[in-house]
Amino acid sequence: MRAVTFQAPGEIQVDEVPDPELLAPDDAIVRVQASGICGSDLHIYHGRVQIEPGFVIGHEFVGEVVAAGDEVSRVAVGDRVLGTYGTACGECFFCRREEFHKCDEARVFGHGSTLGDLQGAQAELLLVPHANLTLRKVPDGLSDDVALFAGDVMGTAYHAVDSRPLAEGETAAILGLGPVGLCAVQAAKAAHAAEVVAIDTVEDRLRMAESFGATPVHLTEQDPRGEVKKLTEGRGVDLAVEAVGHPEALDLALRLARKAGTVSVTGVYAERAEVHMGVLWIKALTLTSGHANVIKHVDPVLERLSSGALDPSPLVTHHMKLDEAPDAYRVYDNKEALKIVLTP
Ligand SMILES: [Zn+2]
Ligand SMILES: [Zn+2]
Image (cartoon, rainbow, N blue to C red; front, side, top):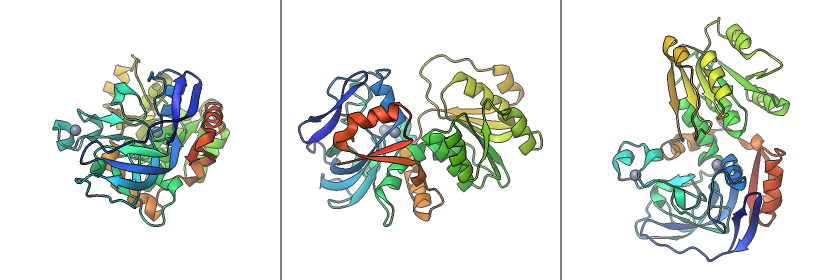
């Protein structure tokens, strides 16, 4: 089969690799019909996340089940399915508490041996372990483009907003309007936020957030703290989502949250970063962070995608062929696309 493989920083290629085979009774094999290129793939592309040369990348997918082991009960051969970005065992201490994102045996598709040695989804075929947890049938009427979002980007945005369930009339600020931030705008609106303030420096992204019902605020040409005060009777927002992964964004999130509010950090951190503990403590803020528990959220997210309460389709700016992956990565790396969907 053909698959997109990492070769060296800045270099990926489309290779012929062996077809996957079922290895465990709860494995399934999916013929991939659409796969997404994600910000986390860029970390691999740039060499910040190191994986073995020749490893197949990608972790967002929709496709058809073409083989399934005896213990696969949730889906069957012939079903159109979507997958979550990673797998969980379903049995460990963490899985029993539905903390699937912290499963002792968590594995992420397309991230090399350090994250579970699971070949990626930017390929014609994909081996899916623990298929009863990892796969869901795509609800009738839902497009591949939209279903793709349930397994990663929208699941992550939903998780970020769900870290503080919003009461009627409560408000949110989203810092950083990449795909996750834009989806978080939608998730906050769908959670009935009375006001969603969307902050970034890129005009197109601010306009898109506005079209989703947010109040756009330019990070540098406007005064985000002043704007948020105006919109919240001087208090600050109930929930601030940091969707950047930068200490300055985190600091601004702490300032924008109201007393006893919540700051939800979904941007990625792998290093030491300073938090003004005095601000956190005096304001009695709750700080939440980490990978999203996408397996736990995938069903409610699919429901909302089906009903149209969440609709990330405007984020899909490019469709390209699997064979064009090297070009697609260049386009994505140049920030010319929000979401690229690869098809066979
Ligand atoms: Zn992703
Ligand atoms: Zn587990």
